[in-house]
Length: 324
Ligand SMILES: Nc1ncnc2c1ncn2[C@@H]1O[C@H](COP(=O)(O)OP(=O)(O)O)[C@@H](O)[C@H]1O
Ligand SMILES: [Mg+2]
Image 1 (tube, rainbow, N blue to C red):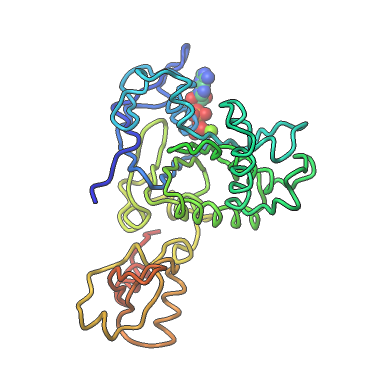
Image 2 (cartoon, rainbow, N blue to C red):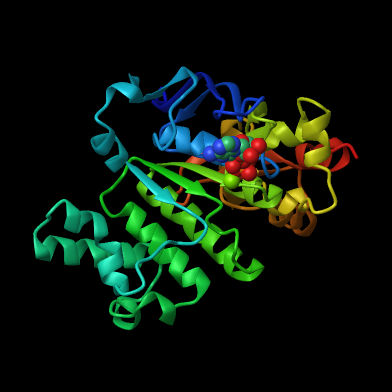
């Protein structure tokens, strides 16, 4: 299936009044519908500006942004914003509203019927894994940071936006909770196939979540590619340093076998041991070490064959994937 383009940036530049430099400089790229794209860069690299240009909080200095092929400047701004969900670091919940009321903000505004709103709130709470029996009528201050962020995500998803813009949503959250939220987001996106643009300065998070990563520095795109391609072939010194810094993750814990799939023969498919396409590379390596053998057959959750993964490929990545 040809993939649809949800958002396209065409030579997008933003210079704030009074600045001598471009905060976003000549950015051109396409975001495929139904994928998670992370925007990775250090503080001040222009990540937030790029998101705020996308939801029209800021106007472009030059260039254009298209939403499903239409220039966003030509769309009525409120109508356009309703197609987007926006989640920021501090969930920004209304303190005097319950969880349910917070999640229902947009449906209320759109005057959905009461029972439809309630149904949607319950559905969303399941989606973000907050038990309605416990949390429906709680207030934000009665929730942990991670739970508040779940409510923020549910609220942003309420009116079924096709694109979610998330600006360091897990930035202020402890490591363990953060990992849970990342996993919940991955699962949720797999279920509803929405498009997510996710800003982070955390390399591990960027690579773990993304189908594709935008690496930014000084307002410019340094590389835009899959995690695997970025790790195995950094485009320049900046990217190379970024993916080999001290706080960088163990790549085997964030890349899945999906990144290394090759075509398998009918014979291989018939006889080969199976492994899920969600398996992280370190677990796949474990399988190889346990079983021996040269390859494993990769299948989806519902048993569709995607190809094979070979021991050699994993070894290659281990040996020369990231140059220090
Ligand atoms: N409203 C603004 N007015 C002037 N300069 C700004 C404004 N917002 C951001 N900038 C500047 O643009 C650059 C990029 O900022 P930002 O997009 O917030 O970076 P990031 O989100 O990657 O940390 C920074 O140098 C910042 O100081
Ligand atoms: Mg920012």
